[in-house]
Image 1 (cartoon, rainbow, N blue to C red):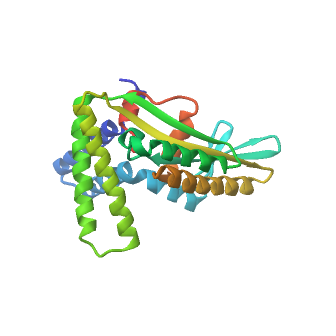
Image 2 (cartoon, rainbow, N blue to C red):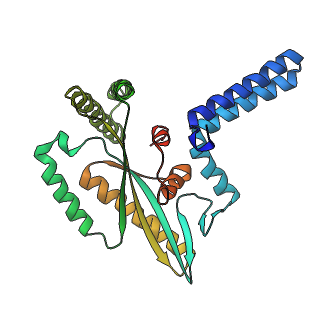
Image 3 (cartoon, one colour):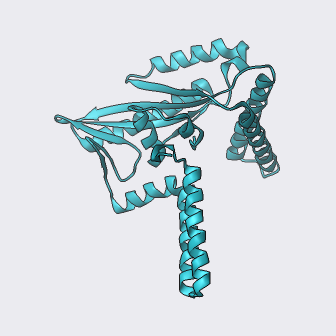
Length: 267
């Protein structure tokens, strides 16, 4: 197994195994300080594996660390990718479109949805890239994951429905209802003989300027505008990507992920 075939789950299991081995050795030697240190390192390792994609951007932002990749650089905020070409700076921002239902689920509104999307896009005065990564997935595991995801969504919806009403709560309940409907529709289509596929949708927009900070601000402004335009037109959740999630999209501009990596995505 090469390094490119190691998934996050396998890396996490290997980390836990090493920490358990260290803990066993610490218990065997009876060194209390070593035992506490092993437990602390195990906790930090698990925390970084689970929440590292949120923590790393905060650390790099506080320490003002700039990551350089070939001719590209990632600023401390880790929310854009910057490249200098001649006297101009180009900044690119990435967003994820969380599509919770297919147009085939509502054929009666598919035409209207696409018309709204086309009208919304014509109002945009800059270049936008829409990407969809697609691959076939294992049917048995897919059904199990969908059932588990639907159960979690139904539980969260019930909890929110019993909470005091608020604008945020109502929006979350509506989003969860769409998710439950999406999962139910997916299971029905599989029962009808359809072959499921995994889809990851993301958007990219780029802004340029002779000034580095201005290029970054323009890219963020365009990303916020696309978040509103695409989210409203397609009735989907669009979120800006930062840290490792953003870097994945940037890397996909050159090399697509393998099937194993697609299974391991957090998106």
